[in-house]
Length: 485
Image 1 (cartoon, rainbow, N blue to C red):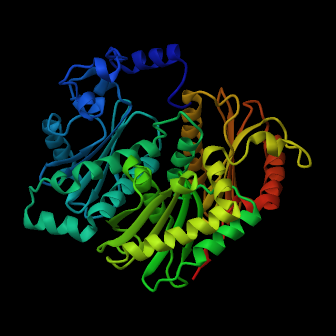
Image 2: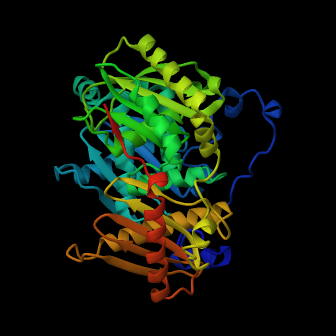
Image 3: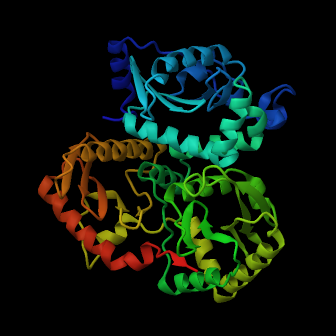
């Protein structure tokens, strides 16, 4: 029933399954000034980087992510130090070798006790997930694919193939660098809702469940001003203009014959939120690869948080095919920021960055009067490839409750899509001890409801119908309509 059950029942279950409980290392609470000079945290290195396979804390992690080359060279690990874990990378390469001859892109899975080991092979790059979070294999494989595409966005697919063709035992960390490692770490954390101190990180995790951006809720007048500002940019080499409020999508503009793939957009969102240097800079110019747009070549991005206009959480990303447009795009940024600031739209966007788009209490109020059995929901528009979800109210205050809900959404989404494809409307109700989750899937949308655990199927359907009417009534403020030059 999820990976955050009661402590007593978890211990009993682990005892029955023969799982050895390893004592946790004490969490250090000393301030940075009190740490010894050789402590990794005082040198700017995260504490988990000093862990190795013998560390109790490393063994207690519920989810590990590794990238290794076909020659056994470590590339990335979510926890621990790659060099300290080097012997284990060799073992993992041996395991992967059993699947390499299959010559297909399908993920492979090995079950070992309560651990699930998922492998994804992408040419000379092997990606491995070791998890005991009870997530479906398909979702773990999807996360590995996102990590691979983020790696491609840093180095390009052709760049990866070229360095390993030239030298199979090349240490890719020399090219990835600290900044590339930080981008990958931020992505893995975002997909697993690692930082749950606010509402928005869990919305980011849901983005990767459905492969779709989470949209900021704005009035029609504000959206009109945003469209006007972004469309004012004129450049023959400009590919995309993207406006973000932290991890929420505000709007994007693209050429008529050029699509912006949701997966590429999520990689850009992760990139700009992965480092404080983007926030502190007046404007950053960086090459990047958008794997679904062009996996073998770089484009160039001008990235700027609009803190000079009292909007420190609003980010403008201008993507161009030319490598010498920094100054012209900086001028375009100033023009866009001035239009948004003078119209008052920028203040509304900054406010949206700091608050959830709505609470479930709003949809429970008149005139829709949806039952208080509704605790939370996710509405995914498959036709627009965007999703919405309310902020969190009781009983989802705690970190454990939020992550439990994420796992339940993952499980129900997986189960409902396993139903026969010929069924026009897929409906599924799953009752856990803490809540029930109801899924409604049709051609244009997917709706997932977290409900009181005693909710009946008839009541769930009634709530679903009322909620669908609420979404249609609010659609213009909840979702964006992409603009084109």
